[in-house]
Structures are given as C-alpha cells and as structure tokens.
Image 1 (cartoon, helix red, strand yellow):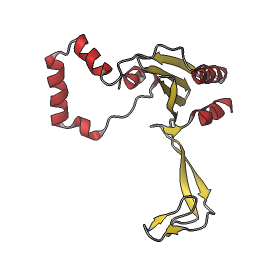
Image 2 (cartoon, rainbow, N blue to C red):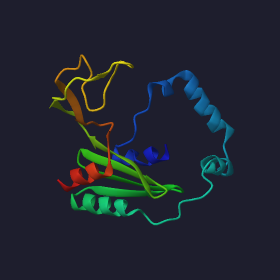
Image 3 (cartoon, helix red, strand yellow):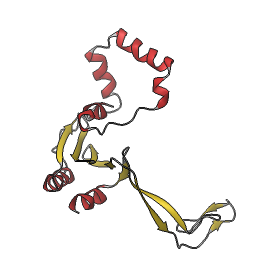
Length: 171
C-alpha cells in the first residue's frame, strides 16, 4: 500500500474496503501502532521472499510512457522501490498508474473522474461445452444477449496493458 499512500496528493489513491473500518480492524491497526515496529522489522518483512533487489535501470517502456505522458500534458511522478518502478500521471480529471517489478511490466490502470460506459454489439455465435456446461472460448454463452455494456473508464481505475495506455496517451 505505500504506492497508494504516496498517491494521495494526486487523488488516485485506492479506495479502502468497507471491512477495514470495522472496530476489530481499527483495533488491530492501533495495536500495531502501539507496538512500535522498528525499521529493522519492517525491512525484514519487505525482503521476505525477494532477497535480491532490482538494481537495474528503469525499463524502456517506463521511459517511453513517461515521454508520451509529458507530451500529452500529464504531470508525471516516478516512484522507485527495492523491487521495481511505478509511474503515475494526472491531467485534469484523467489519470493513470503503471507498474514494473524486476524490469517486467505488471500492469496499468486508467482513471477518470466519471465512469464512462458503451454499448457493445456481441455478434459471436452461441457455443457451449456440453460436458462441462460452460461457454466456449470465442463464443457467447447461452442466455447472453447480443448487446452488453462495457466499462471504458472509472474513478477506481480500469485495468489496461501498456500498449493500450500508450494508445490513450497518444490520442
């Protein structure tokens, strides 16, 4: 969650789940704060399972996305951690976040203040696996209509890949 904590000034922070506001959850957080974890304990917790740090340069995709975003008028912030890099950008009501771990892309999200939807015409034929009674790949499941809604943008972020992010930044 440190990435989201640092993103509060960009208004792109991840919303908290409702169960984190229960009295038991709040008491657990207070107990951990009262215990006073030392920096050494935190370092041990972050290193668990990943003994080698990523000491490499920023990936080429990060540099490319940053250049595209700045050319499109986004305010861009680069975050570096022990295991990788993250990039956040904001322009008015639009924003994005992209992450890389150990030099590999782990994903991106696109954020807009108001959700946008579109109607999609699904003309695929109906197909079902008769043994397992599930829809086949590339086919519509039985009972699905030929028109459906698709979410294009939302404040909580739509998962997209880096190629789609570059396309949105270029347009």
